[in-house]
Length: 104
Image 1 (tube, one colour):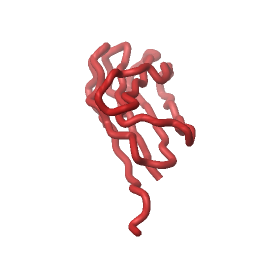
Image 2: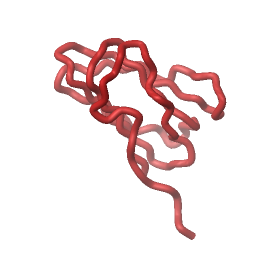
Image 3: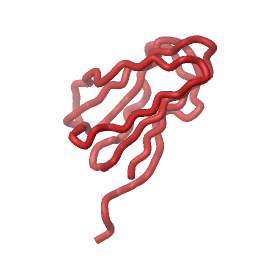
């Protein structure tokens, strides 16, 4: 009777990110209408790997690789058929980054 869960958050919020080191896993399962925004502070392009764990106990699978230009952000709405329990992110360069998820 309370309806589906909603919320927002992410593994990085203005966080110091080390190149090649994955973020902590972040729960993405059980939510509807999921969207993602990735930003960074670098003066160079940063490429982010988006990995998902579809069943909850491995293995991690590459979902998408995106490149974010300086001063820009990446916005993405996950398709309705997207299924995964956990999500994590890895950057190819050191930077301060945010990977923020919205669940509606």
